[in-house]
Length: 301
Image (tube, rainbow, N blue to C red; front, side, top):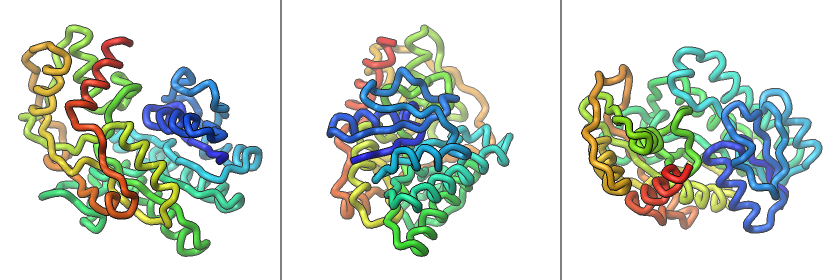
């Protein structure tokens, strides 16, 4: 197939590119390289250095893709709070540009969304019908993107899919960008520093390995359309995560504790049973296996 991966030079996107190349697809990457790295991209994919807000139509007219994995985004929650207009411009206007380009060419879209940032506080595993109570503009903009995909599905009878990810981690996650806690902790240990835990460390997240996320995206390309959670369904506290990381890294170091950050979620965990039923997908990596693969990568860079 001819496929476009927006944000394909980034953490998750570059792994999607690898999977598509491995199965023999013609792969095109749309990335402005503001966060992504050209070095992440397989040499068998064509890179279009472009901004989804302005250049998507041109690239789609040239490539005429059958499939689009839309991962390009403003993904930093702090930036979304400080610059909500910029966040909306990239995540809402940019997604609309992708939708319009896809409409003209009959392209199927698989959209990367977020579970934790959309659901807000959870009192247990949140399914797709859980109340949507985002605490930051980032979650609002991702939810808006989902609603636009749903509206296009109704209006144009398309089959676009939105996947709400848990906390994705794995190789190529930039520990110095808008990284997740796994990359940050591992990088600090590698450099001989002391990881910092905000609050008391009992806050929980649903960690899902990047390879499993990629598998869910490929499976979603054959889905009829809708919203599905992609997570492990397991809560892991920050303290427990750090203990596991120390074991994988074979390093023991007391963390530094700091004041809790305002607005940080205390519990976030997804119910992935719909993806299991409708995609035949479930995570293949335990947290220990995923952390080991991530540490092997980060300790070698």
